[in-house]
Length: 102
View (cartoon, rainbow, N blue to C red):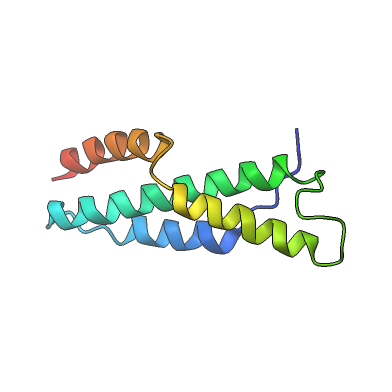
């Protein structure tokens, strides 16, 4: 198993967003849920990219290459959130749970 450097700050923020979902207002909750699912997909994609590009020279071999590589993977993951289907799967599953709560 490959070691993964998890960004716990982002996980905690997403978990806090899920904790704050109010079952009184489902339409607002579904907007929040969609946002959290998209954020999770973005985070997950960035972890995959960081792991897969760890041993490459995509950003060169200079001192700042790791920073450039990190900015590159962050940019790709943020612009691609919601487009890989993982957030849709999560949203569908969790919105069914949310409907049952109400």
